[in-house]
Image (tube, rainbow, N blue to C red; front, side, top):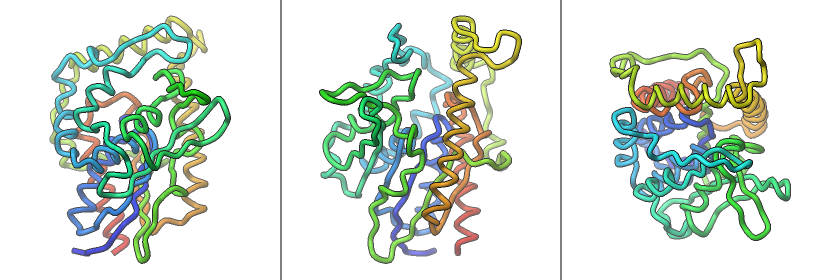
Length: 291
């Protein structure tokens, strides 16, 4: 067991970001003390939940997603800016991320978003943590953006999927980066394999219907297998991977914890238990290599 302070950076990655939970738990199991968190998109969510002390409650809720009528949380809209308003999901999230001020949190917290109106990154280091998370998860074409007086905010991962440059450092700390879009083979640890998936769950069925409807509405490739939604996801994933790779190489973190980008699709939250175990295994491997 070590007793060392760390500055933690959590990447975006949709449902793959659930693996951040397992990573954080494993870091703590090894005696690391998280003093600051910098996150974007799902990394901002998990980091925010941890910062307000609601990790266990959040994890337990995620584990029940395939047993509930999850799509009651999805508020579809005909807006040209996105197909999901996100208000119902975020209202539920208020149970885990109260509308607290970032500057009042016990650990340093940073979330990022992208201002597409002014072509720049927006960094949240004070103000409402709820509003920061809402802006950071506004995935273009999916969640509607957040409008302010002079900005239009979307997912921070658009221009900075691994916000290492915004990590708040302390003397003698360790920089730990969690990259959930890594181009590595998928490894499902034994603990995750034991988790029973309800393959025909309501959630899974609805996700398939959701994808199918999008592809019928606006197919990009009529004679191929890649429709509108899948094409956008693949494109964003490739861009994210390339930017992440260059960012990590530039800053040379002390520990890089990698989760395969093929671990799941962007909305596969029904795999929460499996993803937590994947994150835990990835963290344990990287920590042992570091030590």
